Amino acid sequence: MEKFLPNFRNLPARLSGEQVAQLLGFNVDQVNVLARKNGPLKPIDPNKKGKRFYHVRHIQSCYNNPKFLADAIECLNKHNAEYNNRKEIKQSE
Image 1 (cartoon, rainbow, N blue to C red):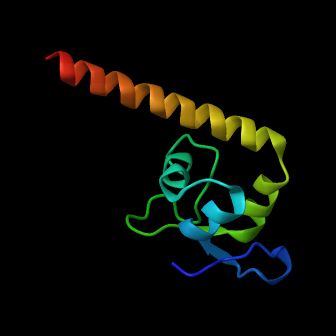
Image 2: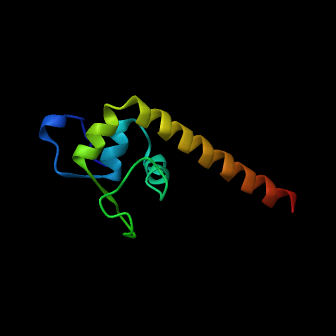
């Protein structure tokens, strides 16, 4: 993966998940979790399978919004708790 430096003046109109992860300080897997149906991150085409792209203005607004960060952390914590519960149930069977 090439090095992507956040410079909001020269960004393309659409960003890949890898670029969004670097701009917002998450890893790519976390960006995928945040872009799910009820997540706080909205891809350009939410129904598309495969590689998702994000509108640069939406990412800029997320970058400058403390509520987005709180919602993102809450979403990731909920996802991790559900994942760990499923894992524990599988191990106990």
